[in-house]
Length: 208
Ligand code: MD6
Ligand code: FE
Figure 1 (cartoon, protein in one colour):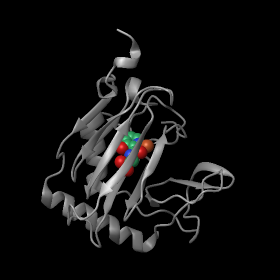
Figure 2: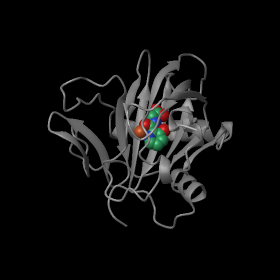
Figure 3: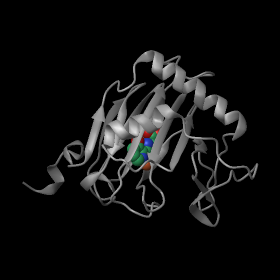
């Protein structure tokens, strides 16, 4: 069978765990994240190409992923306040260990906030030093259409709905698969204070 006919969700290393967090855990985590964002405010970064992203972002942990006209990078401080990123909540360290079985902890959590028409174009996560580590994401709040493709932009894609509490792992052969968010189903959840959707991606940015 030609590779064009393969379902991207069957790529080795892709995993979707529905409702990995129950509703009370979702509510507690969403509140904790929004409280941390008082210290490290969400901002809309600029791509190296000069476009303003529609998703608002902040980070938790030793390093935060950022973007500006000079490129993508991990940095230890918030680009506006200059202060260190808030600590990573214990619940996230526990989720990472349970999902990956790894003793090495994540050193970065990118927090994506989607409201209104925010979306995220197809991309690869490849700014981390050791691509042997997976990226683990947890979604909170409104439903989202998550699109997954292959290792090149030319390969076919397919979409699935991510709901509040769902966990996704991109590891193994899926680690560099293209993926993105087509759209949010606004008002489908009340888990995020103020509405919308949070997606938390746990990464190991620096070598272990
Ligand atoms: C999102 N997720 O769900 C965007 N990246 O809003 C990602 O970009 C992502 O879910 C790496 C691994 C899992 C993900
Ligand atoms: Fe990603």
